[in-house]
Image 1 (cartoon, rainbow, N blue to C red):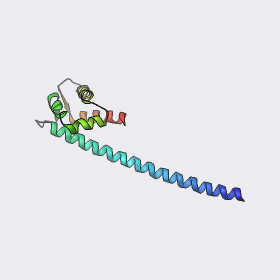
Image 2: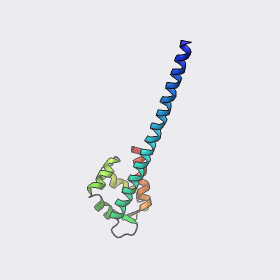
Image 3: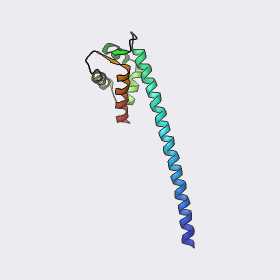
Image 4: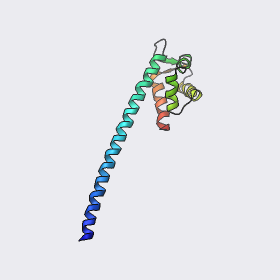
Length: 118
């Protein structure tokens, strides 16, 4: 009888731990999703600010000027890229060697790097 009671108590305890763990995981995933959305908005805003001629493309000169902003540098450092690595990423995203990167290419490339780091 004592063993049966202990088994029931253990079962209830394990069930509560599992439910708590699932809620923690759900909370963690939601927090991560919110962080991603925030970073994407921030990155989009950086791009828009850096796009001086408002043509929807970031030239290499515009990118270099953008990289002078401490907030932009902090963003890239946060995803694991220093100034030189961020510049190398920009150059890699310029697939057609046009000297400019469109916003979607920029966002996609930076977020792919971010996903690999975090």
